[in-house]
Image 1 (tube, rainbow, N blue to C red):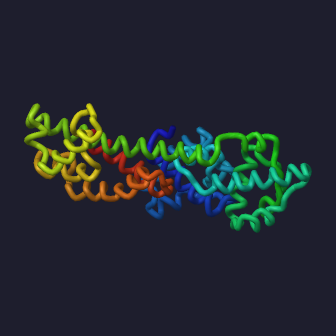
Image 2 (cartoon, rainbow, N blue to C red):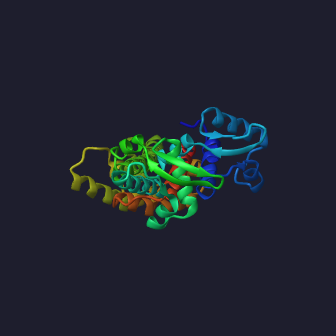
Length: 298
């Protein structure tokens, strides 16, 4: 678990760079110069050293500031985000296993794998590197990178592990937990704020008629026994502050900003409700808004 947002930002940027340039390193100073990392170099260096000591990034040459994500850094990223690489690796391993079953000693040329699946050179190189780092394959290299590979015993065992669907379930469970927390932090905040003003009459005096009617119908339909605020719909979270905006403005600052964020999340919530896998960008958006809500309501 990373300690702060800066460390996660560093790791994410290095992961994005690795996706395009799997065999190269980069000076993180470039991200400071471009404005993607908004800290001074001293603070950056302290956090980089923390990540190096944790084994999540590395500096192949200790005399240089060149930096690269490690296999453990990639695993840290992929624990929270699903990526196309997961499917690619499984395709590569399964294909190598098919060849192994016919010719156990054969090393498969990576061009053959690229041609079979339509993967780019960068996609092949980074995923072969990943599999090689975890000893799932035995590889052969040239100065230009990897050129052939065959599956190892460890790789064969790995194919018996949880399926892609099971890993996607983990990703979606994480996404749902973020959304669940966002919605219910707002519900708790709304009820607490209105109770402090109206006491036990908070629901009658502090909530608009339309929102109340919908919540009452939802509760009756479900025959539920939770607090009435938990039967408000996602769209109602944008409407509840309207009636007593003066009570909420110090925390929510701008009514439009909170509504804008909830509007952004509406399509994400729709995908989760219909069990469609989120993209990396959507998961990042969920994470960021979750942090913003916690900070806002602190």
